Image (cartoon, rainbow, N blue to C red; front, side, top):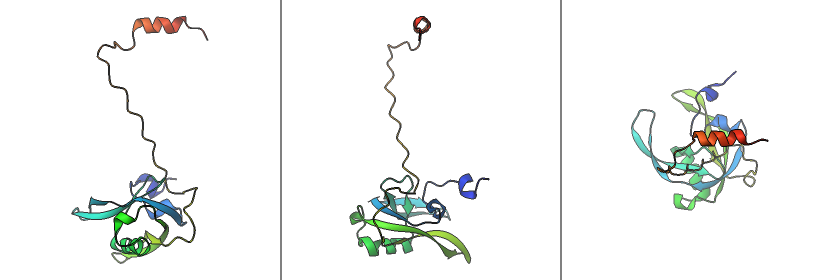
Length: 148
């Protein structure tokens, strides 16, 4: 039976993506990006991208402070640092909700990273040749004459 996360996938990392276990990751980049908040207003957030992972992690103030305590206050210096992401709970609007928190890693980045892998980028199709008529009847006859 599909779960809520199966039915409503996110392009951003969620606690469910960690499968209940911590993951040591290496920061690939940490740019500031404009994002829409839950109320629809735009805000600028630092977004962590990880080596070998498909999903990114927009930082709230708590996670920004936790990451800065490990990597320093200048986000330009964060790439190359290892951090550990772990699932836990926090309270939002008076209700406990799943969340991801950051801590100093107790080990090196996991070679078998459990985060979703990056999707391969398909190659660009060759540009169309206006002089190429495409698949023709002659091509079909050539195929019919070939024996395997």
